Image 1 (cartoon, rainbow, N blue to C red):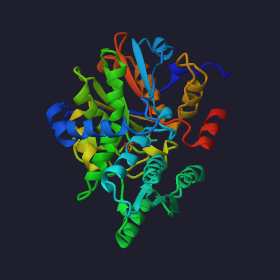
Image 2: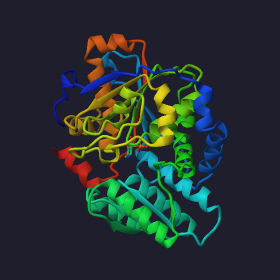
Image 3: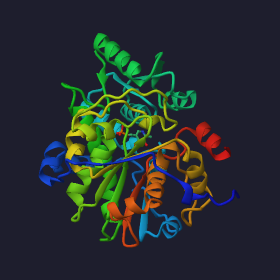
Image 4: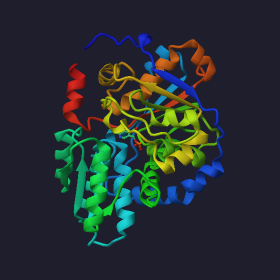
Length: 375
Ligand SMILES: Cc1ncc(COP(=O)(O)O)c(C=O)c1O
């Protein structure tokens, strides 16, 4: 076994307080409604092999950080797709096609969303076209092919793959099932977020009336984070402090929270946390996040491999956890903030705190996972 990781030396990169924080349940549930959330749970909990993913106690890490409890929602066990994304894309495919078998589905993806859309299409016997950038691994492409999708690789980054997807879909009359919203495209991203909200329903059943004091949410374009905030509004009585974590190379939510407006950033180097390497927060999530977030924090890629190994080697919990690259930033940011006594005090993080983290994915990219384990 590797030597114990030195979490006492871990740092976050930047930290920001949201000056516009004003959590308003009613406003949030106007954007993703209680009805949308209930409907998603009703449908998804009836899918074959549905089972709530585990909520694991990081009972070794909380002792090291002097925090009461740390809950880790383990999405590596979400169906056989190994990430929370299984809940969103597949649900949106089912809702927008509504039994029509003649529709051809398309999407652009960093990997996990496409896997979900391909799976959802396959379940319903629909043809599916998936656009990926040059940064998406061949391993991830192969998994999408195994769910029956045609995978089309596009030169450039995620934006280029999305543009190509939109162009070809318009030309060929394909139904785009995208997890990002734009001006006249909001229904599908809303359905996707409704699908994700199943996680919060499960958590509210799993915490046994314990109160969560802090919730740390990873963000790419913000869909997952906003869906969890809506879930908090619907299911929790006491509102925890809401913290967004992003790669320091792709902090589009932090930059937007800083100015109070959506800011498009430039990504100079793609983060290893590929699903979170996004340059602009999506419209719908932004409407939820702009006033509900308390703090934003960014982290570097430096601690990814150590976190993956610590989870696998039972350093943070009694049980072994398979956590992929996007499962690490919640832990890294919590450790980094906890190591800074001023921040601990500012955000009320102490031995009475119960922190909720999201293990967004398992070894969804098995080759990268093995590389991180062996680094
Ligand atoms: C695998 C993966 N993809 C994407 C995201 C980002 O989701 P979103 O783009 O909805 O913010 C995450 C989590 O933050 C993730 O773990």
